[in-house]
Length: 207
Image (cartoon, rainbow, N blue to C red; front, top):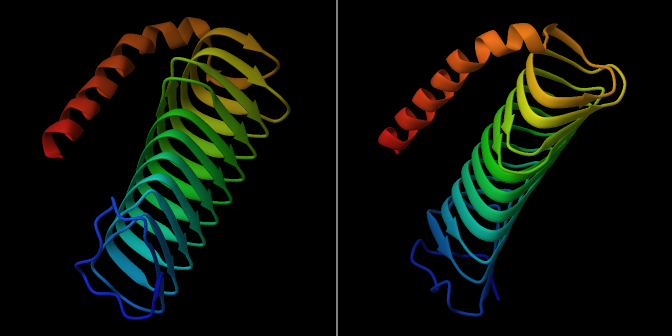
């Protein structure tokens, strides 16, 4: 285990090593397990990454946890954000509590008291006291005291005090306040799908 001085060129991710960084600004980190606290890092690659009260440019890991921390880009199997923020996240599962992100591409997402710009998912999305500008998923959406500007889902299950501007869903269980209901939503569906396609195409071209 390494504590204190860390150089930009570190161990290979195949090494069974642990690196802890506290109160330092470093460039690149590669190890089996990485913890960054009270500092900042450039690119982090590891099996398990914990960033606490710190920041990072990009993170690639199997499990990434951000506690009162921020990152530009995070790619991981599981991403847990607690009072932190991420610009772009790509994962199998994203969980956020009292945090936020701009864009998430994921299988499933769970937000509690959080905000997000857009969530593109293949599975279920759960919103609890949260707000997302756009949710597009092939699965179900569960909302409780939450809101979404645009919501496209297979099924929507709502609790109390939830609302959307535009909602397109195969089935809605519960009460949800929507400016545009199913009839009006169908009229906007094709145009919105085209916009999403163009956005994704442009994003892939730029990356």
